[in-house]
Length: 496
Ligand SMILES: CCCCCCCCCCCCC/C=C/[C@@H](O)[C@H](COP(=O)(O)O)NC(=O)CCCCCCCCCCCCCCC
Ligand SMILES: Nc1ncnc2c1ncn2[C@@H]1O[C@H](COP(=O)(O)OP(=O)(O)O)[C@@H](O)[C@H]1O
Ligand SMILES: [Ca+2]
Image: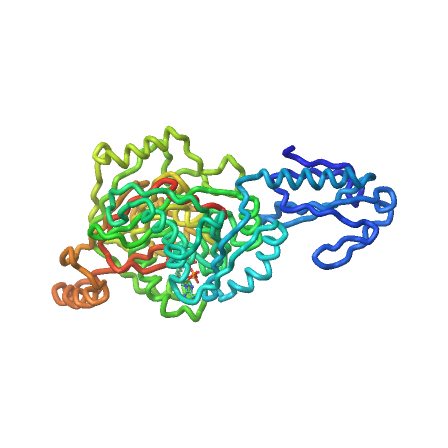
């Protein structure tokens, strides 16, 4: 039984509901009305008389612009036994849907975005989980990395079917770090080796948007809406996702799932962290300021291009889960095998090296679509193909850079500009020009010192500091010289 089409509803019309989109079913006491949301509702008199038994099905209704809503439909019938049989059968069908979670571990960041995480969860999400009979253990974080450390060491993961975070990309990143690190530790994998093959996580991660950018939610679900995300979680909608590992000198730094940005996005983030009190608007303020500063950075980017069978960053296709199935990024085993062999034998494809002065170096493992840019930094990037789109924006005039930025918000191609290039890569490295030594450690200290040194040595220079910072999913990395590898399907980061 994949569809439920039943006699007549309270309005006397027939109604079809896909079982996979049913959230809950409950019997009604028609004589007395129904206890729905705590309110008593009187059934229409005509239906009550003709069909004294009824049950209500709560299901997912697709609303406008990727939004999902919970709707109710009440089915009436003549015999009580038949009514009970329907309810029981539907419950059995729901229990048989193994992809659905029954027990969830929820972390709420009360500090992210507009600091509404707890309210969003209590008012919009918790009632839906209760309706769908999902039990939850809720932890409101008390400090940064609370969730990451709890997941990595203490959490009794066997008790849960998945973890959910209520927050932004930074909170999601904490989940990824906690789960991936724990999985590697449990399997004896050394995260410090960039060549080491990582073991995929078995628990899914869900995200309820309550942060500032929420691009991971937007790029997967198509909209930042807590109710939509909660419904995706309940029906067990899933999407694997690429994860990039970032190393410095064979030392593991962080994982990234959305944006790794040096130059513009790094400087913007560093500035915006001091303005957290402004909420999500801090990014616009710091973005404007960084745009005016117009710093460029010299360095060398080397990368291992991905094969063109996966498409190119200039494709017109879009990869988004929660869309129609066709658009789901689900590469065949064949392609997956090729990806694995490429990772094992990188020399077959050869590295390319590009030196230059860059306003921005961005690696987008997914489109990075968000409300500010609904098509994202790299609109054709795939969610789970083992590649990241490396975007190099060379030094250009402010006017041209503004044109490039503005194109993220319009239908025009942001890559179709002489100073921009984009490559789909499997691995890349970046070395800043003024990289003093392998032991270059404190960026801020070295950056300041080098800045004054460079300006003394080159009085005609435009006074750009030697180093920017890497923005890694909204967190600042402590090193400028990094090596990045993209892993296919490492986390079952799912729509939930
Ligand atoms: C002139 C308008 C230009 C608009 C350009 C928009 C490009 C937007 C690309 C956004 C990519 C987002 C990638 C996501 C990164 C997140 O992981 C990460 C963490 O998220 P969280 O806070 O939820 O934890 N977020 C971020 O790093 C923030 C990215 C926000 C980018 C906003 C940039 C605004 C730039 C405004 C420039 C204004 C120039 C105006 C000149 C007159
Ligand atoms: N209770 C807390 N107090 C302070 N910081 C926290 C807390 N919980 C999580 N964080 C940190 O807050 C930062 C931002 O979280 P995030 O949810 O991404 O919000 P935003 O999108 O506004 O940046 C992350 O670096 C996360 O580690
Ligand atoms: Ca990708």
